[in-house]
Length: 398
Ligand SMILES: C[C@H](CCC[C@@H](C)[C@H]1CC[C@H]2[C@@H]3[C@H](O)C[C@@H]4C[C@H](O)CC[C@]4(C)[C@H]3C[C@H](O)[C@]12C)C(=O)SCCNC(=O)CCNC(=O)[C@H](O)C(C)(C)COP(=O)(O)OP(=O)(O)OC[C@H]1O[C@@H](n2cnc3c(N)ncnc32)[C@H](O)[C@@H]1OP(=O)(O)O
Image (tube, rainbow, N blue to C red; front, side, top):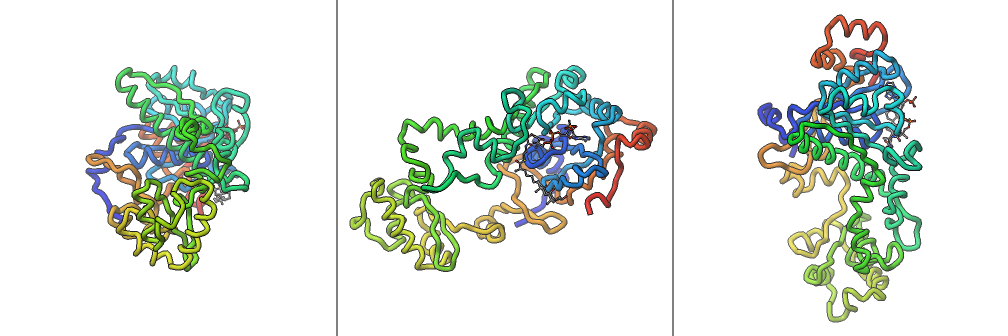
């Protein structure tokens, strides 16, 4: 576990040389920037100066591999700095509601006119147009509007939002990163940037294409929580074990189902057929009573070397130390001993090399970034005295 890579590998990462400006936002944009940084992009997070309450309340925990520049965009000099930075950047990630950037004089027309190669990624909940474009919202709202939330949940219960994983991160952060990489790929051919309208409603809806396009297969013909893959089936369910832990069962195909039945010590010939929907509730009760007779570890020793599709439901701590995950170095540790998932997927020649350094403090790299982007020391001093930028301030994050 926790393998480290060399500087040469870091320099050879797939996105090395790509300059990204990420305007600080809540959960999805930081993930998007972190993915790009993990795969080698030079990501600068543009923070509000830490004097403001909004900056203090930020608490970004997805800043791995990024540097921080504290810039007051509400000041004309601050907005001018961002325009100049965008002139030399490849990607801008913008996490505000539609209209915010336009009010600051930093809309796509302005920035793309100055740098036609710029990829301007607008990561929002509802997108740039439509009735809700200017409304506030969070993951749960986007998930609801996509139609997906209506499918999630147990029988006879209200719909259930699985933390903020689906809209914020999968449909938002990851989908936006995909859009950026696609646009970078296209730019290599055309030499031109473009605007990405990454709506989390649409991102999560797109992720759910299988659900939409499989409706005619009868997979979703029952009410929520009574179908094959939404906890209706006894062989696609989570069961409690005798030590209060859980196992996940996903024995869909008959050959795997047979192994499940064998491992549970049941006799296939004495059970209703696997796909007899009307027997599913009764079968769930039977499976639950059998699983309750052994501990999680005991069930693992029954099923680990079979194809019954039974796995332990692991805590974060147990996941990081599980033999399989350790064998693949699936979790990494940074200089502060924090454990987190290794970037995925693994590229054979140019894998991600996540930074081991602690996250940046707000404004920690303001000066070095501005110098790197061609600002003179005098210009930086002037911006500082005008309070348009903030320099390293370790107190801000203590
Ligand atoms: C479910 C998730 C949300 C999870 C959030 C949690 C991760 C965090 C929420 C609370 C945090 C904790 C709390 O703060 C207490 C602790 C604080 C401590 O420091 C750290 C630990 C904490 C426990 C802390 C921990 C965590 O951080 C929390 C638990 C989501 O769904 S996230 C997805 C949200 N949606 C979007 O991102 C879609 C697009 N964005 C929007 O729709 C809006 O931005 C949004 C999210 C609705 C917010 O609206 P808001 O009115 O606030 O902003 P905007 O309209 O976009 O306008 C931005 C304004 O800010 C100005 N501005 C921006 N940058 C600068 C700058 N550099 N300088 C100056 N000004 C700037 C900009 O000009 C806009 O101003 P105007 O409104 O005047 O135009």
